[in-house]
Length: 219
Image 1 (cartoon, rainbow, N blue to C red):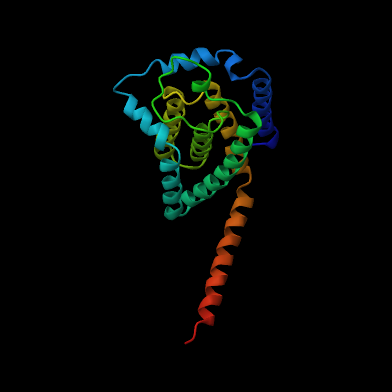
Image 2 (cartoon, one colour):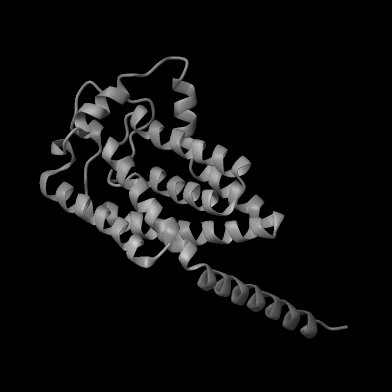
């Protein structure tokens, strides 16, 4: 995708963030309403599923997926390298955003919340889970067959929804997590040559050091 279109997505994220920084998430239109709508729609049969996705739907799914794709090689390794690049960018921008925005989580402000998991201690905006899985979902949609990408995309949606369902994120946290995640995923795909070059240099450096070590060993 052309950089100008990616820049528009980043700009949308920045504009929403500026508004949130000024008025706070609790005053953002519809944020409280949709939080209660989702959080108060809990069903006993669904609670364990949502707790699972909320706790494990990010690193416990996407790290193994990335590793397996890398091992498979070919087009799957290409997708794996883009995922790694995208995740690195997402972690950096996500953490910076959290501390710049410094938005409290809903359970610190609202009452009558059905909290199903332990209270996180970091800031709320944006949702790190939604950000990471959004990056992953978009990259696999762009690089892998539908029979792999669609299930992972559904998993990303469930993980994102679960963060509001269990009571630890505002709906807006998840929405902007996806907006930023889409922009980062597209950025990673545009930087594919750079990511591949870095990977090849790291591999060559490791192999070179291994050869030197083997040559130094006494025969």
